[in-house]
Length: 73
Image (cartoon, rainbow, N blue to C red; front, top):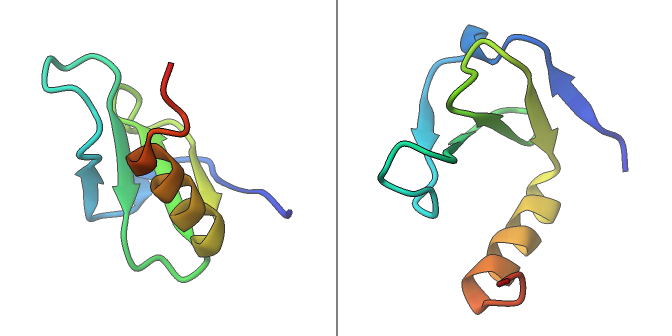
């Protein structure tokens, strides 16, 4: 798998908070839809930090595993 990093995630517009992030403002993951190279993911506490870009198929598999409880504590 080839990894891709966007050094300054704030350079992109349209971030949305993951529905699996807590509402208390703690650990929040944001994703960006419709990016041409995959699914960028960033830490909302560091909006100017890097974002990791995952292949769409890999991200889809990850979301499926989370929803099914396969990654629960």
